Structures are given as C-alpha cells and as structure tokens.
Image 1 (cartoon, one colour):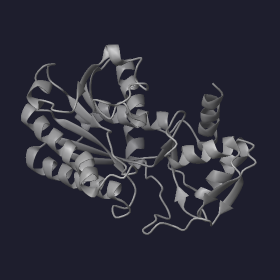
Image 2 (cartoon, one colour):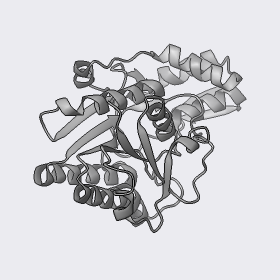
Image 3 (cartoon, one colour):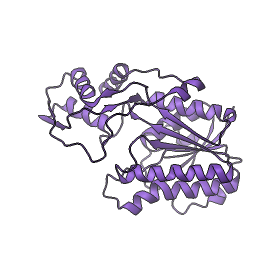
Image 4 (spheres, helix red, strand yellow):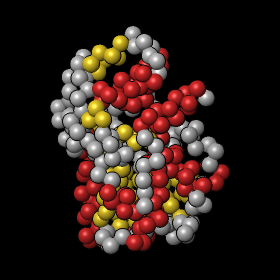
Length: 292
C-alpha cells in the first residue's frame, strides 16, 4: 500500500537512505530540512519529493496541503559534537519532534516512527534528550491514541558515512595509514549493522503498522551479533592492509560507558525482517565504496 510519508533528517546519512528507499517503493515523500542543509546525499530524488524548510514552518499548511499524511518518520538528530549547549541539543532532539507530534495529532496523523539510540541516557546530552522524547512518545500513546514506534538503533555503518562516526573514523584512519590510532582497551562489545539492513527494518515496520495491537512499540535494530571493539578495529585493520599502529588503551573509557550492547531482534524477526549483511560482507561493501 502506497502511503504519504513525512520524513525528517533526509539530508543526513540514515535519512538519505530512507528517502531513496521510500521513493523507490512508490510512496509520496514530504521532506523537512533545515534551510542551509546540504542536499548532496538526496539530489537525485529532490525532483520526486516535496521539500519544506523547518525555519518558520506553518504546520497547518504542512498537514493540509498534500492530503492525509499516513506516518512521520523522524531521523533528524543533533549529536552535540559541535559545541552545542544543552538547550540547543534538547531543542533539536526533544523540542522540535514534540512540536511535530503536537501538530500531527491535531491533523489526525496516526503514526510517529522515532529513531532512538541504545546508549545509556546519562552518557551524553544526545542520549539524554533522545530518551526524553521516548517518554513523551509513551505519553502520546496513552492519551492521544497515536502509534509511537521506537527504533533503537545499534551501531550502523555503510559507505559514505561521516568521519565523526566511530566506524568511519577507524576505516578512514586505517586507509590513510596514519602513524597511530589511539583507542580504548576495546573490551566493549558492540552490535554493528549495515545501513541497508537498518533501512529494511524501517520499511517492514511501516508496512506492518496496521497489524500492531499496542500504540507503543519498540524494535531493537541490529545484527543480533556483538563483537568487541578491539575485534572490530583489528578486522578493519586487516581488511585495509593498514600500517597504522593500533594504540589500544591510550584512551580511557567514558563515564557510563556501555560495555555490552547487543540487539534483541526477536520482534523484528516476527515481522519477517532478517539481517542480510554480516560484518565481513558489510565492510567489503564499504571498501568497494571507497574504491569507487
């Protein structure tokens, strides 16, 4: 069934993959973006989408000009890595999507699909503000009978991601053969999931919403397999044939560091989803992307 989807964060990494996949499936796509956002990731689909800038946006026009909007997929986020103060991070990750939910409720939109993190809520401003939005989502479910679907993402990766992401940072430095890469001891275990498997999880949830019994639903999105950070880095080091010295233990663990993160994908499996790309396959695809 073709739907009208409102997507935030379409100019980002995850959002751009989702935008292209939604267009490919024939959905009508409305994109919310910042006025100064770069469109390089989605330039090929801009002519097929409806685009609004969020600055001074009139929500009453947004929710009435293009027929009924079936669902909102929210991927926009602020990681707080560019010197943002707490109120700015809160506004981006809690305030803005909360206003969007308010307007969606008034317009009769029945579904809000949220992008969440598996990080401990007190680890950073980013994780705290994301957890606060989930609490608001639960409130909306209970009082407004709106479906709030929470997608808790493990560490996704893929070709063309930004260097601020750990996976890309490690890959880029190994490829560049930097003299030394400073790391923690690497005992933390992480679930690394390929970007196309993440996108397919969103698509199957979107397709199955009518079957959900509860207004609040949460899905852990990962491969279901965790490996240590050390094993991951050494695997990348081997695949890239890098000469970089891996300085494990040079960086201390963060306060509140999660030592084991592994997605319980049972709920997604019940929907018919499965992870198609294992870590070795995914890293090879990333390497092919670099060569291209």
